[in-house]
Image (tube, rainbow, N blue to C red; front, side):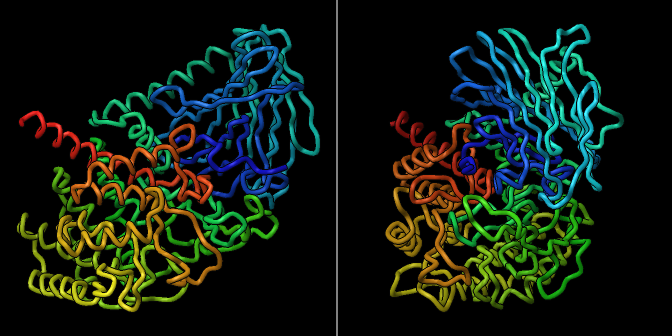
Length: 614
């Protein structure tokens, strides 16, 4: 069986973990009890050995459509058949800031018109399909038990119900058939670490769980201050980012998946279920831009904890990524028994890039601290002590090769972007210390900041290309440098920047989609190619806007919206065919979408105001 396309999935979650549900009603990805825990359902990466929790009409042809219940994370998959219309409503009741092994995945089965027989198959494969399990069926459900994790399946029905369901066990999997007529609602609740055996859940309690979950998300979204264009897609991006944030620590995972390929059939398949300093730092801009100050403050606390936990070494006072609980054991291994998405192997768990030196993370972190300070989230004394430690290290260590933002495995280079963001780190530290009278090595920080500026203008600028280039030993362009005007290093209308933007238009942009760089011209230590990088496309929109090309920016933004899936979700990349590839959904893409929408909307509003004034 061919795996369902990456984009043919919706995301639900409880703020500790998430599940991906396909347009034909199958839970194809679910890790429990956390984002970075082993999978229980992994059909997305191996339909035969990965496991699934499937709901679909029985015994007849159907087609399906999928939508979110408005302003919520409740996902509705609708089935259309000759005998009627039915739907499955999937959600996970949100959890609070205390880590727990207890999670609930709710599946409501409803017949909307006519009649419908639902076929349900629960086929868990614990520990990425490596651990055996035992299955026990009871009057009110079933228990799936492995050595490390137990899942309990509860039936949803009223005690005086006529018998609407039939159940059987086959090779440790449970199959249920449910016959419903218009207006009837039944369902199943899958619970990890339950406090007792399977139980009968009344339909009224089931509906209350739905109402409570929807109410939570609508209450959260009501805090958004965004009222500009593209509000629906911006708010869906915000909800998606919230879903991918681990409530106990505030850590934002780069994506809830692993192993989804940057090139179908290729080896660029990574585990993204961790918190990158870079991605989480960018979240501060997006969250504050939408009015979510509580989440931004939580990240600032998370960042300070990481600096205090990690003594400065070769890679500096910060790792580039962490587990959601703040630990840093991300040893990479290969799941040899899994076939991978459409044969894309190896399937990796853990991330071997965790030990890389990436100088840019310090600029992103300090820029977010500065931005938060501007919004009224002041740095505490303990926080400033951590900031000073970071900046003292950056001042003494910026002038060395690193692996760069794209985590290449082809060796260290003097990447221009790493230098740029080191400049940002020192510049923001100087501004913070000056504004608040904080103790700091200002003379040294200023000297090193200015030295970085001079070096980039001398060595990062390539006169032959008339552009800033990826690193000092190449003439290759790099779309990471689209952030140069955004961070204030250069004016967005400086001739050198406009020339760089023109060069990128020619070399990295195709139908408004943007490649990170050309791996053929700048070998990165990996075989194969990749698609356009969705983050870079939204960064391109931002750069065009700041350069005064608002017409081009709006056109690029609107085109990019056509590449979203049916729910407004984006993976990491877009293939030549327009297909979404890479891990899904990707936080960085949704963060960049929000940022570019805010920037472009403000520019369009300003243009309208000028037009009316004239």
